[in-house]
Each structure stands twice: as C-alpha cells, then as structure tokens.
Image (cartoon, rainbow, N blue to C red; front, side, top):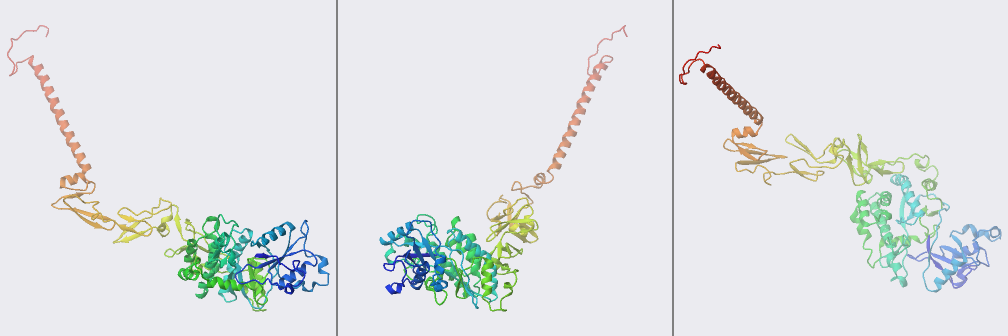
Length: 567
C-alpha cells in the first residue's frame, strides 16, 4: 500500500473529529491515497484511527512521543474502555512509528517536500457475498521483492481455476491497475518524469526505488496499460480468460532481471496467443502525449470506493462481490472465498472437489510451439494450467524455448518429420536436407541452395555455367542435377567436363582399367618374345664356336688339319 503523508495543521493528535476543524482526507481521482500522521497521546489509538477513517484517510500513522521499542497499539485497556463499540467498524490500516522517523517526516513536509510511504500487509479477512463478480488489483512490476514474487506465483497457480470458472460462466473477472497522478507543482521533477506518462497523469513507483538505474515507474505504467488493453480486447472478442495467459507468459518470458521487460517481448507474447496486436496498440495510444488515456482514467476512478468496498490502496487487492478480500493470496484460500460467494447449492463442481482439468492446449495450442504437419506440440496440460516444453517423440528429443521454436536433435531425428528440415519429391526423385549423422541442423543437398529448413531451390547448373561448358557440350537442367550431351558421335566426360571420341571416352570411362590390363598383357608378350630371340641367338653363337673346332663352316676360312695325340 503506497500513500502520501499529510500532517494536519490542527487536531494533530486526532482525538477529535476532523470535520470539527474543517479538514478532509478524501482521496481525489488519480492522486495517492492519504496517510494521515498524528501524534500519540490524549486518547486511545482506536479513536485516532476512527476519526482518521471518518475524514477519508486511507491509513493512519501514529508518531510515538518517546524513544522506545515500539509497542502494539491494540491494548486491553483500550478494548475495555467502554468506547470500543466503533472498533469493529475500523477498516483502515494503522501503524505506530518511531519518534525519530516521525520527526524526519515532519521536517520534510515542513520544507514543502512530498513524502510517500509504502505499507505492506500479507494477511486480511475475507468478506463474501451472494454474487461472484471479482476483480484483482494487480501490477506488472516484478522487482519489488517477496510481494511481487508471491503475486506472480498466485497468478500462475490460480490461472487454471480462474479460466475454468470464467469459461463456464460461473464468474465475471476484471483485472484492475492502480496508478497515481503527479501534483502539478512537481511535474518537472526527475521523480515525476521517470515515474509518470501522459504528462504526469498516470504514475507508478520506481521498481528498484533508484532513479539512476534499471527500469522506471513509467515502464511499469505502460506495461500495466498493455495488460489492461489486452483484457479489453480479449473481453470484446469473447475470450476474457486469455488475460491470465498473457500476464503469466509475460512474467515468464519478459522479466526485468533479464532485461526483457520491453514492448517487443510483450508483442511476441501477444502474437503467440493469437490476440489482436493492432487493436491492443490502438488502445494503448501514445504514452508521451499530453492527453488523458480512457483506460487508465477509468482505472483511477475505480480506485475510489463506492458503497461497502472502500478505496483500493493495497497491492495486490482482491475484491469479491464488491467486498475487499482480506485473506491469504493463495489458490486454495482465494478459491474457497470465491466459492463462498455462490448461493447455497449453486456452487460449481470445482468448489466441491480438488480435481480440476482445464486442458488449455485445446485452444490456440496454449500459445506454445507446434508442428501441425507432424502433429507435435510443446504444450502440455497440467493441473495449474499448461506449460510450454519441447517434447520427446519416439526417443527423439526436441530442444528450444517451447514457445516459438523446438528442433529435433540426435541421430534419429530425421525419422521425425524429417528433423524439421526441407524435403522434396519430384518425378520419382526424393531429396532431403536432413542428415542422420548430424545431431542438429539442416543443409540443402548437392544441386540445391537455400536455408535447408523452409526451402531448398534447384540450382540451374546450365544457366549459372557451373557444368557442361565445353564447346561441343549441350546442357539441359534437371531437378537437383543436369544432363550434358555431345554431338558428332562424341561422349561427355563428367569428371573432366569435356567431349571425347569413342576410344578416348572408353578409356576415360569404365573400360579404362581393362585397357591397362590389355596394355600390360601386350607388354608381357613382347618381352617374352624378345627374351626368346636373345636366348636363341646366344645358343646359336655357342654352337657355331664348338662346331668350328671340328669342321669348317661356310663363313670361316679353311685351316690345315692337325693330329692331336691327346684325343
């Protein structure tokens, strides 16, 4: 709960009715709720709170008049004083603050400074009614500590139940957003410029309470506006329950800590849910314009309490049947409070059992990734709603963010929808960009070009002069390849990209090995013949020399015969 502190000039102990001194703390549309600061003493704490509430204060701060450990203001003496009949009627929160803190606040106010204080309670009491129309005053800020963390967890946990009740017409839900306006005297200050949009009309506190870093309050206001516009457009189209999908998906996909709290990330979430982005942008309008925004203006007006509801000053606040719910913000507690709002015997079955099925994947695939051709989806229904996780199909694991992309991985990936890669069939030929021995990725096969995922286009080798470029060649492109022919009885050699004669072609073709064998055989026969001739000539020469010793030869001169006695 955030409010602006006021220290009254009269009745500073708050023991009298403020109307007696003509003082009112009623909240004006668009302004911070008023926290009245009063001094301790002269009357009971409860009477101070009662007078502040009657004057329109959203909360009361009691300044201790001594330096001590703070006490609990609800004392037995007070309850038994005989004037406690109004105690049960007090609805505004109260807090006792230390003397030192109170003095600092008073000094700042006396110097003309604006003092805003944040109060935080986690428990309250529920107030059910017969009709179940409820609204949640929420905020897109996710950097405010445990309070923001608890709110986001509640949105995730309660989404399934909320959507089921809304779809079947058991409830009428409305999301609400608190904003404040910057006082005219502070419009040019750094605080107003960083925390407000539309010239100071709509403001939110800085997420980190540090104006020099991180996101600003105006970033929170703009995202609040986008969420409110998402609901407005979805409600007009008959799907108000989609708001729960948007806020939970945005919290998961676009957190401040990851620097994704941006319009671009918001647009991606809106598109994934199939909502009308154009109409939402028209609803948001120009945050820099010096004009009123109808949506945020209506939210400011709704903050002011009417009837028994009271002003909405605490974030988050749940209002059920026009009564502020004061219980724990958890799925079980809130569902119990909503169910208590139905007339007896008219409550839906969800109020009588813990079992619930919401199968959000049946509509728009839950905003998750899917491959319709292969009937594969990343949407998995759960008790709380749905999650977007890349699946495992036939022992093939898909990897990705689950929202916009999932890709098959592993050695068997081509068996599942061709691994998400391109595949083409034409004239009995089948080509694929998926390679089984690759764990991921797609690559167009030879003869094609493209990304390998959405398309692979045939390469015209003839037109691009990549093949069949010899003078006698005639090129014809085919799907995934080409044909090359030669004229005048010539044959085309693909290895050399030339036209050759029959003999040359045969050598350069499949008969080349045969020719090698034939040449080797011929060489062997010739070698053997040469060897035989050489041997024959050698033997003839030797015989001639032996025979020449015994008889003359025709080509040798005659010599006188000699008698050899040793023979």
